[in-house]
Each structure stands twice: as C-alpha cells, then as structure tokens.
Length: 200
Ligand SMILES: Nc1ncnc2c1ncn2[C@@H]1O[C@H](COP(=O)(O)OP(=O)(O)OP(=O)(O)O)[C@@H](O)[C@H]1O
Ligand SMILES: O=C(O)c1ccc[n+]([C@@H]2O[C@H](COP(=O)([O-])O)[C@@H](O)[C@H]2O)c1
Image (cartoon, rainbow, N blue to C red; front, top):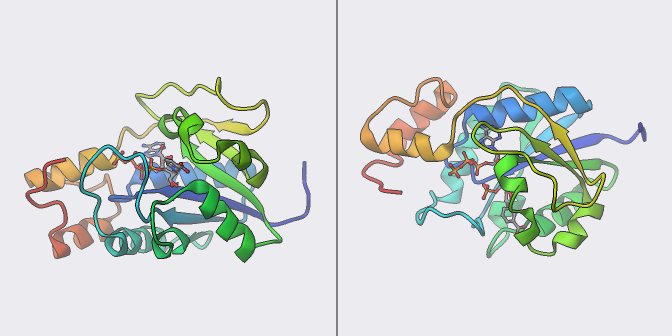
C-alpha cells in the first residue's frame, strides 16, 4: 500500500564493527521496499549481546558514518548512543517517531535478531510503532512463528557470511578484514588499534 508518506528504514545494530552484511541488507531492503532513506542506529549499550566487551559507542558510531558516507540514501543517528542506559528498540522507535512524525518506519533485523524478538522490551508495543523487516542471514533459519501475522515482512538478501564477531576475532589475531568491512573501516580499526589483543 502506498501512503505518500516518506518511507524510512531503520537499521539498528551494535556495529562492532559495521560490515558488508549490514550494508547489503540495508541496500537490498531499500530497493525492494522502495525506502527513501535508511538510518543506521548504533546501539548505546546493547541489551542481549553475549560478548562481554563492546567497543566505545563513539568508535562504533564513527565507523558507521564512514561505512555509509558514500550512499546518499544512508544516514546515521545518534539517538541510541546519546540516550543513557541500556538500548531498547521501543525507545529507538519513539525517538525517531518524534524526530520524523511524517515518516512510515521500517525496522530492519536479521534472522538471528528476529528469532529473539519475543524477549525484547515491550515487544507488544513494537508492532504498532514500525513495520518490521526480517532479512535472511547465512547460518540462521528465518522463523516468524512468534510474531503477529503481517507484522514482519521477509526479504531475501544476498547471502554474505560475515559477522562482527568474526571481524573482531580476525583483527585481534592480526588476520585480514579487508573486503569484509569497507576500506575506511579497515583503516579506522588499524588507526585506533581496535580489537587488538581482545578475547571475545
Ligand atoms: N551478514 C548478515 N546478513 C544479514 N543480516 C545481518 C548480517 N550481519 C548482521 N545482520 C543483522 O544486522 C543487525 C545488526 O547486527 P550486529 O551489529 O549485531 O552484527 P553481528 O554481525 O550480528 O554482530 P555480532 O557477531 O557481534 O553478534 C542484526 O539485525 C543482524 O541480524
Ligand atoms: O529492545 C530490545 O529489548 C532489544 C533487544 C535486543 C536487540 N535489540 C535491537 O536489535 C538491533 C540489533 O541488535 P544486536 O544486539 O543484534 O546488535 C539493535 O537495534 C538493538 O537495539 C533490541
């Protein structure tokens, strides 16, 4: 259905670091759903991440800015990193709704994230705040068993078997991350010595 309202994709993530799997997912969803813009929203303090050490928000924010800079439809928001406390999507969507009252919101998540959505804060409120978009991801089965009918749109995206966990492990071990993350992000990681000596 076309409402004539701007269509704003919201790509939330820890982005530690941002990689080509994130970028291709956002680009594909934008093309398939006719989104006018995709705003990347790095988390402040993620709530369900298993690894103990999450890189400083400012580094993750800047890597996301570098990675998205060339795409005129991609932007980056500070709403989650500027809000104190744990990051919850219910707050992300409320803040973006306040900033962009004219837009329809499409929250983009991977198959692994949507599988855990029943445990998200105030999950029952989320469905009215945005349309959810679940993208395929290698190694994860996309299941919409726990979500209300029609609340989530499935989009198959080009399969890139890349994770931030593997990028961190590689950077810590001195192995290449070239072509897994954008060139500017490779250089940013090296310049700031991110992940060096880190054990997930
Ligand atoms: N390769 C990928 N293909 C499709 N979706 C992805 C891919 N990598 C991440 N995503 C999705 O992007 C969003 C943000 O992901 P996140 O920043 O947690 O990256 P990650 O690679 O899953 O990180 P980590 O390995 O640290 O758990 C999530 O919804 C996730 O499912
Ligand atoms: O709201 C929640 O309870 C919640 C729990 C886990 C993840 N999320 C959101 O899902 C997105 C991906 O999170 P992550 O941890 O996989 O990087 C990001 O925008 C998170 O804020 C949200």
